[in-house]
Image (tube, rainbow, N blue to C red; front, side, top):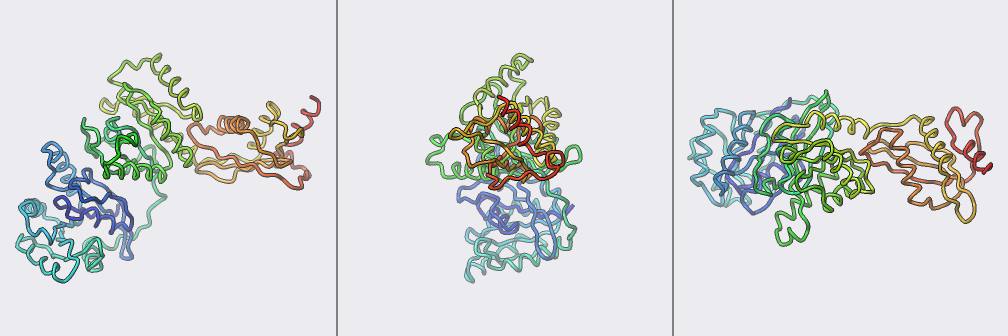
Length: 462
């Protein structure tokens, strides 16, 4: 395991800006509104001196007492795992009582510590950094502008002194899963239930999660990254709320970065058009998907009710009726093993490749059972097919002439491929190209599975 650097401080001192700067990308939301970060957010940083984990934590002065208690709990857990602590303060605001409160807690923690006097954007402000030595901490105070990178090299040298040297190359990256859904559908509760700890803050108040939070998780010998995203509401409901609109944009961005999307639906409220649109967006982006009806403990989910919900969902989805459906109760821990088994199946299928002979047999059988529509009075024949990609699977089918294959027949072939390859919940991308000078190579029908021969003979007898 790489060492861990934990960032703490009161709200709006620039912790998330420093977090983004250390990991080299904009992962945490940065906003002038205090309290944007609530859960602890983890990412890895890679620098020449080594690799280390970085954890961003929520600020101390959350307005809501209950929310402050939950944020404090997350911060304490992060500090227990820390190898180095970066205590961020604000040279513009100066030393405040909240800073002294955090300093007392860090003094008792007795872990390596650096005080980061942020917002030192010029020499005049940099002189204010010395005021924080009065906190009496056994730590260097480094004036820094996280936004402008002023003195950032000096901070990296301090980090290197605390955690540098870990250079072991990571294994293949974890399989990223974006958990999406409307507010209060139980996304954070599901993550906590799967990892077996209160990793994310949960509340009955919609919108508790404001930014996407990644949680590493291992199941069945495979590494996953569960990304809990902010609740997705209709555009008209977030108009005028800049922060919430930003969280929606970031949630969609994490869908694009994932490989699998779990669409979480409140079993009491059921699937709605907005959920179907998000699933459609995920599939268009080439992401696998599983539909999860959560909060099953609140309704009588017997076999008949599950069948009804599944049928209603597939009818609403239409274009994506192949998406598997799971039923859970995150708070009661019901259905979690079945869900993880389904996730493991879809994750494996996402990167699966079908042998070329088998692929061509499937395409040939589809062509025999239901030939492609004629084009301007002339038959369209499929000559052969190859799989060009995996994760998600992509195929190229070569035809005897330039023709626009009707979308209904395209869907028919995709369904045949999905059934044969076990690709339920996985998007398939099939491209059609014209073989300008098709020629039958000796032994091609046996060795490579050409699909043109038997199908054309059968059609000729019709």
